[in-house]
Image 1 (cartoon, rainbow, N blue to C red):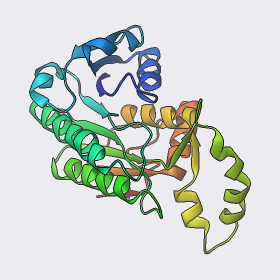
Image 2 (image 1 turned 45 degrees about the vertical axis):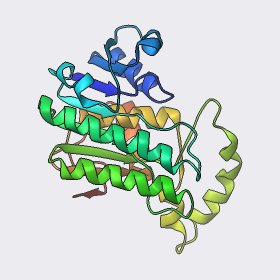
Image 3 (image 1 turned 90 degrees about the vertical axis):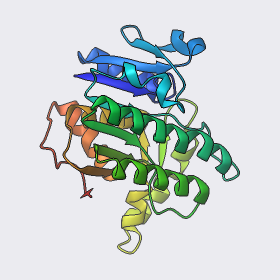
Length: 232
């Protein structure tokens, strides 16, 4: 498959790009000139500005899938202005470029919703999802809550608490929706989404992220409706 990625030099983006290349896909990545050296070997760079569609739209084709991973690092409640200037603006630019290039499938990492904290972040990510849905491009939207990995291990101490809540009928759905996923699960789920495009808009929440990762490890593609819980 031919895949175009924005945010390919980030925490998730580098790993996704590398796995896609290792699995035989052709990957082109939008990067700033100073960051091109961070791309995995085999990834074709496109120098441009993630919030300016005209700077890269002509280089998206012939990709059929667009993976959008641009966002403010280390989200905090006081960063709403940055979320709008980076997260939301870059989604507008990527969707515009994807539409002009004839992209068939758009893959986006959002955040678990609803949630009791990080209201500004959730609000902007919901707006990003709405932009994608209105575009008419088929899309997979992944909704993790917290991704465990290098430099991001502190929530492991909460795992016993999560297990307890999952056993309580009144708390089970919330505990699962706001559950923790590993960086390996997140990357595998993204690759699964790329390799299993969908018609319409597919929402993959935490339980389905884990399931998609397991399907990829087992070498099972599944059908277009699996493992998603919702489509709109």
